[in-house]
Length: 329
Ligand code: SF4
Image (cartoon, rainbow, N blue to C red; front, side, top):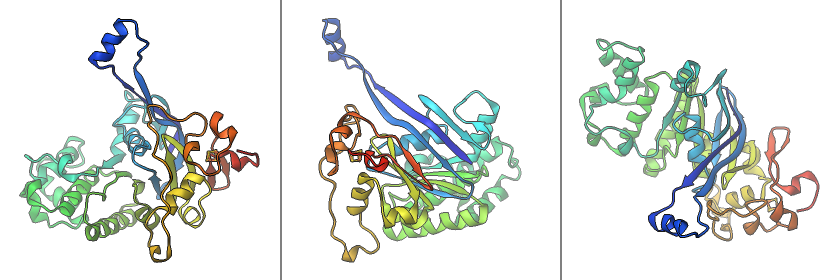
């Protein structure tokens, strides 16, 4: 359903006044470039929930925004069904983008505080002719019911709701344009733990009832283990492991995925000892050469410091580590 091939996104940090001045005086100062996402390739099948995990700053949100069409790619292609969604000008891409909706982390900042729920949820549906202005009230009521909200709330404003209810409004707004694919970017991270469980259950119910497919971005491995069919692990902009969720949580193969799971609180945490990943995550402005993980990897060898490992596919799994090709690190 979704196909990413060699997707990359480079951000340029502009020079500040002092740096510009230094350059005018002849200093070798150049704009810094950040490879926020570097050559990411994976697929999502219809009906699947693919979890995208990694530490903060690994590029997972940037990748989600590119899939949603909110951020252009620097290189590579993203195909949804048969449309190239990276071709912003094409009518097929515009139609595909309507089917790809994003649910954000902070419902308060993503909802217009001056609009009533009816307008928030119904405007885009009217604009895209999925309903008429005359029928919008009924359309919104039906959509609110799908996310477990009382349709009588439609005339209220976002500040009159709890965090969990606001997130349900955000989900209703996405559902109102009848998407096939939801990109959930830390969509439950801002909620209380008890509310998180309710919203996860809502996502699972919607998946079953509306035949939805998800790219579920989260730093919370407990949530990913619970909801995802397959998991894509990212480190400093690169995909380092792809695996069915059960296989990954039973036995991660990439040393970073092993370390990430080792330090994460899990449902069986009572009998686990946590081992934090050693060292700080390096600055994406100046990533280590070769395998980006080598300064923190207990298995790193000379090859890791000079050569970036390719993502090697082995059945349903793929791992980017020199140790995977039978050679040495
Ligand atoms: Fe560790 Fe080397 Fe594998 Fe990178 S390529 S994860 S540094 S062993």
